[in-house]
Image (cartoon, rainbow, N blue to C red; front, side, top):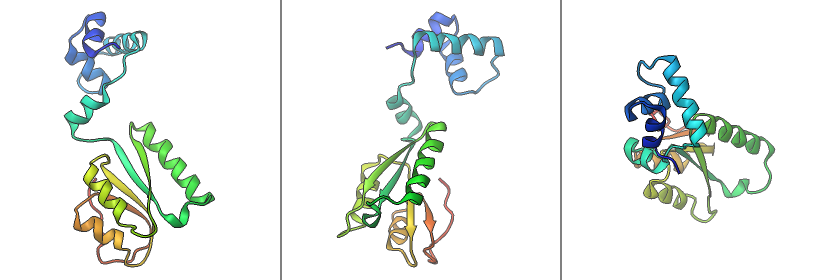
Length: 159
């Protein structure tokens, strides 16, 4: 598998230039940018997501715990989740779906937080005074809600 060093050597540019092109940063001339991207394509270079995760301290993954009550086909939520996945992937993110147990609905959120596999949670089907909202606030974990929890804890946090 080719590395960023291989791309730089083949393109006749520095590793920094390749990095700037791949991250759409810096003042790189369009001709150089196009050449580097052609080399990337021809070599079949793909980014090392593990290295990127370590560098940025981001998994670029959103967690979604599917409530036990929604395990059956739910056309609206299924369409919504499908679109979330498409939009996330277009931006270089992924969605990791968890099954939320009916007997202990907070357990899955504890596992999500402690595993550090996701950067935030999409909280669907929020209800009035939803205990998941309080739990996520208590753990200072980024989330967005879909639904109405009507809680005094509903605040916008940066993600």
